[in-house]
Image (tube, rainbow over all chains, first blue to last red; front, side, top):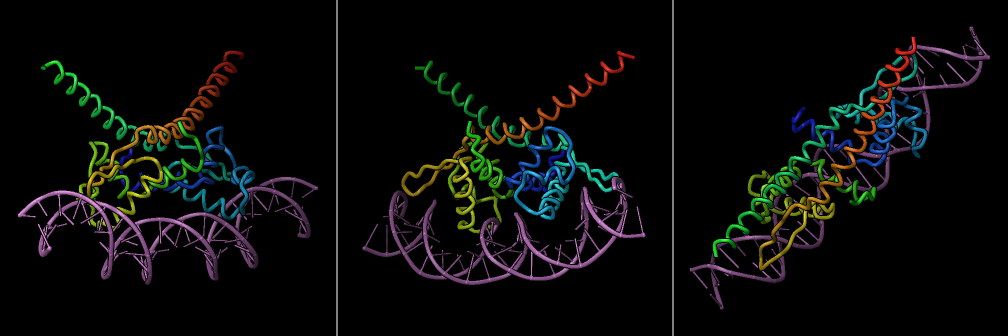
Length: 111
Length: 111
DNA sequence: GAAATACTGAAGTAACTACTTAACTATTTT
DNA sequence: AAAATAGTTAAGTAGTTACTTCAGTATTTC
């Protein structure tokens, strides 16, 4: 799993945009062409291609061109890296609270 | 868990910045004052306060002012919401691949 | 081979972001 | 009460982002 901060930056930045999240959501249900990705979005095809480039640069999506159709798919490894970063921080916090809880319980015992 | 897309937007946008992620990382090890958060960052205190406001607006961090010190802490619920969004998409994709694998295996059995 | 399809790239623009400095307020400490 | 501390707020600015339109290039289809 890539913890390169620059890569994390690109991933979270990619996920920050609602249109791009919608694209990821669509792709989570299966591969799609650029036009299929564009269809539910209220913007030009050109704009969608630009969003797609952001997603691809972030590593969250990979694409392959066959003939005139570019097929896009999710990269679950990259998604997992973002997920992992958040999870680690949340767990660190929760472990801390647990230790604090134990400490308080122990202190109470000693009275 | 809040799935409000506007809230997700704010959260991912908040996490997109490396300085803000560093602040979250620091807070995952325990509460901190604004100056403590600022200390490792190469920017003015003012800039840190602005980042902090973004984090607070996103719901990822909450703060409480006592006297002249503002103490900041992580909101694990919000972190979990972001985590959950990513996880759902990745699982949707992986379930899809599993079904596809089963289908291919079944098809092979039928020869 | 002409027309339709599926994208791609460049240029322009309006809005937003991440800062800065400087002036300020509120709270402690001495 | 003066000085130091901790944070806040406003205004300005350079750089970035999310689009747009328009003109292009391959690839199919008819």
